[in-house]
Amino acid sequence: MSTQYVLGIDLGTTNCVLAYAALEDEHPQVSLLAIPQVVDNHTCESRSSLPSFSFLAGASHSGDQQSSHNQAEGHLDLPWAKGRHFAVGEFARWQSAEAPQRTVSAAKSWLCHDRVDRYAPILPWNAPDTVDKISPLVASQRYLEHLAAAWEDAFPEAPIAEQRVVLTVPASFDPVARQLTHEAALAAGLPNDLVLLEEPQSAVYAWLLAEGDRWRDSLGIGDQLLVCDIGGGTTDFTLVGVKEQAGDLILQRLAVGNHLLVGGDNMDLALAHMAAEKFQEQGTRLDPWQSVALWHSCRAAKESLLSDDGPASHTVSVLGRGSKLIGGTVSVELKREAVEDVLVDGFLPRAQLGDRPARKRASGFQEIGLPFESDPAITRHLAAFLAAQTDEGEAIRPPSHVLFNGGVFKAASLRDRLLEVLASFGNEAARPLHNVDDMDHAVAQGAAYYGWTKHHGGVRIRGGVARSYYVGVETAGLAIPGAPRPLRALCVVPFGMEEGTTAEVPSDEIGLVHGQPAEFRFFASATRHEDQPGDTLEQWDEQELTETVPLRATLPEDESVEEPYVPVRFESAITELGMFELWCVSTQSDGRWKLEFTVREEAKDEQGAGNAT
Image 1 (cartoon, rainbow, N blue to C red):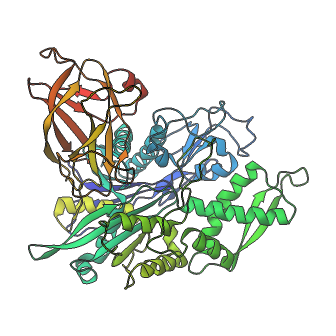
Image 2 (image 1 turned 45 degrees about the horizontal axis):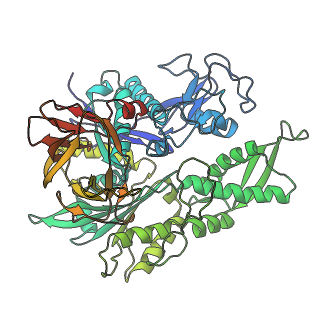
């Protein structure tokens, strides 16, 4: 059976979307898949998006205080799955208010959190032992399995494994997070040759799809486009430049910001704090269960009040918990003007180019969890991002254009404030590009269009890898008690290295430990764009280079070498999927070892990340 469609999948922190286009069409026609999902007990309906929540009912949880739903057998059935004890999507999202310790959320953020074992059953985080938890990898796999099943339910003649699939990831995802996403996708039945595409690039492709050939009327040579993507759980910044090649305009990704854990969920929580104060003024003190429910209720209030034709006020209610309130509710009114003040000034305050995010105040004891940003002021993070793209001594160049993406920017007040701040950064105001009509679905639509252009030809954004990568090489020298040997950082992957390419890394011979456990240290930089393979850094600060997850492995022994190390040179590769591979090539034999990123605890203790060929 030949490939018929290209599918674009947005595996979002808060919502998942699947868009598709027929490859035989000469002009792209991108459509959204209606996704069947459980929305209530024994009720399955289709939605244009699948909320990224997983509810773990278990075989029975009638003793749990959290859930008021009937747990009769079959209440979570889907057209393609019967007798399930878990649900993903709309029902699970609402259960996050009623049964928070049985509901997984933000799995994507956990997937890129390198301080936890992402293969371990740790979600829901801090849930009691009575809950059968799942890993961030399994949670992501379940969302993709649901999308795959929904696709094959709608298009049984086009199995997803035989279609072209473009799966989006944050531009700031490191190699480990990309590999985990790829692994979850393969486990869910997606094709082996699926492509990973950065979300901000997908948003630009959605704009290109909407504009057609008119895009050249909006952008000119030398322009810089800021893609500002604020979703439910994260914020991402990307700069795209407009250049000329062979007399035609081309787009090239210039820079990518850090993966910031601040977004619409933070805004909902801010409104929940506002509402809680109002409840307290009425003499109602909310317990933890009600506070979680209030947080999720405030999401609907935000979306209603900030819409273009939103009401002047919105009633927020939670179920009563006291003996006099069983079966009843308690309510407060949130005013549109007050909500706008809290969200606009709290998350997009006026800022200057010299402003930086406030540093987190050190505390002796900290709860282990996701590394949320300590400063929610997105505009200060933006100022820091723009400053990081400028050489020392040069004036910071604000972007000439901005493309909004993410559900948060459906609110005109938030778009207007960001434009105001960008205008204060430079002499001219950044011009907003005409957005696609539906920012909730733009990433998936752009991914489908990207896949169509790869087949038919069209405008492509040139980008390559979003960071430079380095290996840590321990220097030789006299040992000093209590002091580690100095480390040099050797560039093995330059910024912008294209997918499907390899690079030889010039260097002196380097000893590769083999036949015994060893730790290999890697570093990444989002700002050192000029470094080339073979360049060595003797010293650096944390703003320049950040250390990634180390590789711990026992590489197979080369029996032709008697020493505990093999002299090698490096070859780096970026696969067509955008995955980073580092080959260690012996200079004395035919030995070749490939270092691959892994976070499996058992791999760290056994053979681990090293393979030999």
